Length: 413
Image (cartoon, rainbow, N blue to C red):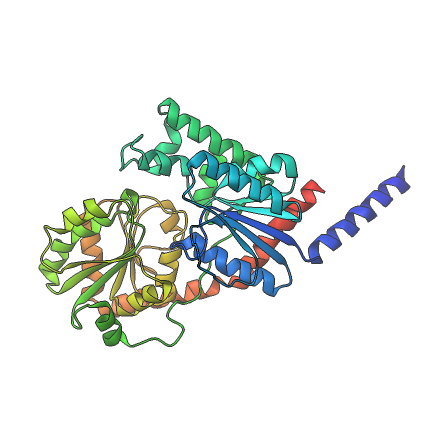
């Protein structure tokens, strides 16, 4: 009996050794990918490159409608057409994951769990899911099933109509079927556990970013000229998809209060989305040219906007861990953020930035005026933030992500 146990331990040790060093074949499945805007596409683009640089084989299945467009990546990218009706689109996506997943050691699914879960019923592969948000909450807000200002924390605790509850059940089902869950902050981990996911399978892996202004770029005056901004203005920047929970309306309402103290203040909004028409209406009441909608821009233009900015603001009602907030901090731009779970994981009020209550235009205006009035204080906060973000190295994030992949593989093995 003892010899059998010793033999089993030897085999297990050998398996662990091989798992810790062998190159992996990784299939990434995501609803969004480069060149889509936003944090997840940027994160996945860089992650894939780093994995390949370390000798791992990567394939990506995503959506996209790019007839005639050829983009080069160091790994194959398969795009399922977005123009198909939703049921057909889900079937096509699941079929592609099933087809390409046969050669994978692990599936890495990014916030798009349903078709991958269906495909994995057949594949039976180790499945790691990254969760950065609550799809059920976003879906419910987007379709008017809950109020647009419904806090995500309250959403976790309350019950709603049959359609909302059906979407929540679907999300909880595919999350519980994952072998491991990666989340960007403890805040996200807490509400994922509330879906009935075993806490032992939830792993916090903090996002990291490189300084988007690290490459040679024009000085502030040239950056402002390129963006059509006044050279002497106080430029407040926000970068976000224009959806209700991003809180752009809070900034628009705060701007007149800011201009009472800083008459040259300009709000630059980079991004686009379904809330644009409503926000245009709100901005019509602001002083002429004080609110600038730049639309969706390439990443290089977003870096230019950071060079042009005096302060960065993120007033979301929800963030898991904001990629763009990390980029602003990495670039040394002083930040004001809404006082919510994901932002509190990055910003400590008065130490490396400022926090303001969600939806409070007056408090948001006060925080931004504080940064614009006291440039020494703003520089101190930005310097602390920049140093802290630089400690979150991409190498460490990759090591931690690979450890989760190998833990999922070992569990299945």
